[in-house]
Amino acid sequence: MRRLKKFILFSVIGLVLIIFVILGIEAIFKRNTQDLIYRDISELPNSKTVIILGASVHADGKLSPILQDRVDTAIKLFREGKVEDFLVTGDHRSDDYNEVAAMVSYLEAKGINKDLITSDHAGLDTYDSMYRAGKLFEIDDAVVVTQEFHLPRALFIARNLGYNYTGFPADQRAYQTEYRLKQREKLANLKALWEVLLKKEPKTLEARLSNN
Image (cartoon, rainbow, N blue to C red; front, top):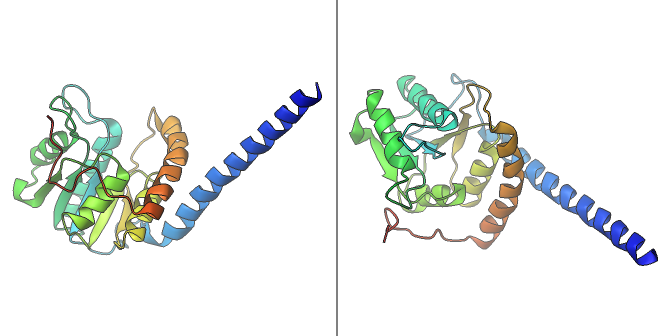
């Protein structure tokens, strides 16, 4: 009985410590990036490029609501004269799943000239997308567009890789999966901090992944 009580006590203490670490990292990310996030388009500094971070697409190539809002927000920044061109970065690790092509098709359907769009087919996660934007595509003047809960992690990664990007939130509605994504974000922060500390290189620095 005494052993069981000790086990329960140490388990509770361990759980509390884990929660404090997770919340602490989240607070650090927010505090270190709050000056980089602009919510009023009139106050957003002009940038050369808008970076659109990928998210899920449906089997028919239709953008998920979260991704559609990211792309629509980027288009708005372009039409307001805040950016000059686009970098779309996302997952294209197989022939039957292509976030990048879906975003490019949507942009072109909205009247964006394809010559203004650069595609990163190997942005498998936020860290890879930020690393490749600066290292491979040599983008040093950009605004990152994604949802509010995702911006601190993206910008923390960028800043610690030496890229002074700004951020603009793409939230335009309530999302069905928003609660789950926000909880996942807390765990993703742990991974991002580890990657930043190790200065991890992406899986590839080629223009895209091989599907072989």
